[in-house]
Length: 159
Image (tube, rainbow, N blue to C red):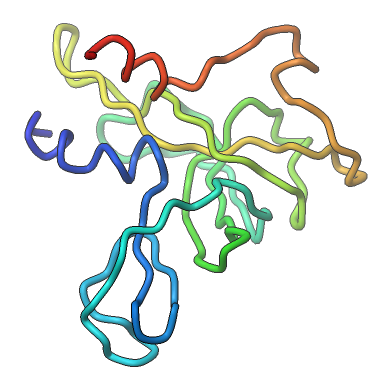
């Protein structure tokens, strides 16, 4: 991964920023250049809330090259509250805690590192915000630790 490409994708990876068609209002993540509803080409930036519902998931026991250190891990299809479907790794949970229909929220976590001294790439993952019975809980508080949003740390570090 080149540093320039990682920099260009930072709004999508750290803030779940997509776009919205100016003609019909359809929302997209990742951003599109042509609206699939009306074929419009005029868009405005759209900031997604990062909240949604777990539509489907699977447990990965064989990883693509470069992701072996994360095995095993869960990957889910998340239906965002604003409409789009997003594929993402699920984090901060045990596999037995996952249930289709469960509420989830976006968090920023490490995706991978390139070599021992290489670039560390961060991006979005999702974690449950409800237990398997639908009761709301704070995942980090339930496990006894607090994870600050990484994009705030990155913003303050580089200002």
